[in-house]
Image (cartoon, rainbow, N blue to C red; front, side, top):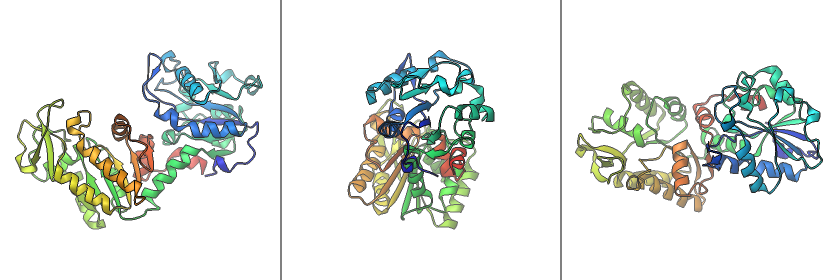
Length: 392
């Protein structure tokens, strides 16, 4: 991919910039600004280069219909304060816009087009729509890795009509993922959680030949414990996944990848109650596994200590209750300790893991924290993402 930072002449060039600003908005209030903060480097870079910046993004799933509550207006207001610069939001019908309608004033440097998903042509990857968007600018920059698993007009077909570049955040994301999938510094460990093994089986199968250790926590670990014959009481679990687990153990043995699961657990009878550390053989029928126990934490920390690269995707327990957040917090502490000593490369991804880190303001203590969701997971599965393919 061509990197926008390598492009020397950007003075007064019109840059069509695809961003992912799909943040939670309720009554015009943004409840999580993480994705907006991540695009500040590319905005500041293009401002410094005196480019004319035309931003395309989306919020929610309007399905080709104009929905006032999914306007980009609150995002523009937030970003204006962040960069201390005026932003113009154009709500006119994009299909009726012409190049000369944009940047009419010499003071206009940043213009937002309204939610691109207000147009059904976007998700249909319509060639004419892409061509029309391209007519507004001199070059295209994709800095929305988290949208790059979608074959949409402003991600995919747009690259057929303009010189196209990878943005700063997209490059960081791809480089980070390459370090845990191809350019690996071993030993490499994956800590993986979530409620369902079936949704992540393709990721697990893709990672087993590349990883030295895969540590199961959360609901996924419950499935393995049940498969191994332990009573897991009322714990969250997935039905009919024995064949999947058999396949995981078969592949891991074949590829010499060690599978680790909890040795002890923190159980409770209610999600909002207190916990008790128990050995696996002592779990009662009316109890739920809500975190890993002390022995499990120590074992995981030993593995992290010996690792040079780590991928963390899924908290260790029901962290929303502090009584069941210790496992996740101790994993964070150990990785952070290794980061400070510069003896590990760490990548974190997945909505729940990022939410845990945000809840205790700890997401800046890793080499890379991905907010990309589906694109992050599909990349780990080994899939070719349309947005990356288009830039290549």
